[in-house]
Amino acid sequence: MINDTCVFLQLLIPLERFLTPDESSVDLIQLYLQAVFSSAVTSRRSPVLYVIAVHHINRFIYDRSDVDRQQLRHWIIRQIMRLQDKVCMSCIGTR
Image (tube, rainbow, N blue to C red; front, top):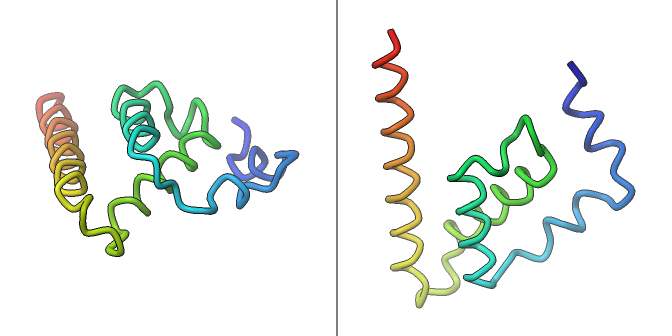
C-alpha cells in the first residue's frame, strides 16, 4: 500500500492552491457533496480530490460571514448526520 502522504508530495501544483480561496459557488459545493456522498470521491480512491472537496464543504458550513446561506448550511449538516446514521446502523447490523 502506498503511503497517503506520498500522493500529496507528488503534486505538481501545491495542494494549498486548490484550497484557497474558499469556494463560494453553491453549485460547486453541491457537486462536492454529491461526489463525497455517492462515494465517487473517497479518501482511498482519490485522496487529493477528497481533501479538496471535504475542505471546501467544511469551510462553507462554518463560514458565518454569509447569513443568507444559513438555511443551506443547516440542510448540509442534516444530510451529513443522516449519512453518519446510515453508516453507524450498517456497522451495527453487520455484527
